[in-house]
Image (tube, rainbow, N blue to C red; front, side, top):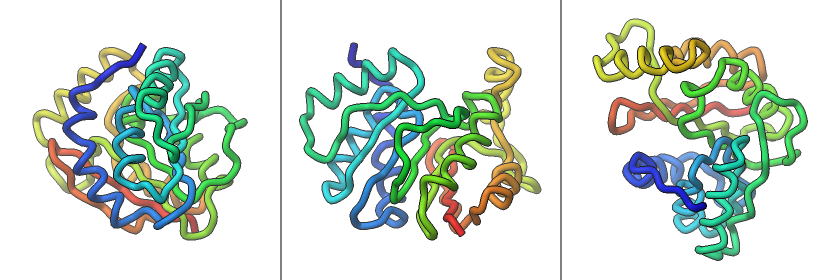
Length: 197
């Protein structure tokens, strides 16, 4: 069943504006944790020269993505693949960019660790790993809405929660990436860009 997300509808265009600065002109973009599939549809239309590969670990999400893919029929939008970020055997072995929207805070830290570790094997030198979502930053006071959201997330699952940018920078360093950009986004979100060294 095809699903929709109000937040996906709101943030697709701002995310795409950042991606226009960070993605290669051609090649394969691997999207991890594609959710409803709406971002994949939007980006495939916005970037027709790029091949878009959506993925997710949730069967309901995969069904939704597949419904969107069938409805749009874009030649550059592939059928979704099952992918769990924290697992070792990914169905895609090479990509020119990796995009992950709103996963880091709604998953265990092991999923983000797996994302960086597997991305270091999938991406070539200079290729971007792009993360979008809420983040805390050392030395900057967190906005009340993000603090409340973090509390809500941790009440749902103690393994979830908004992460610090410094945590992701450290993980990037240990997995062969360096952060090259930080884009402030609407609704107190950030887009962080890491590139393979």
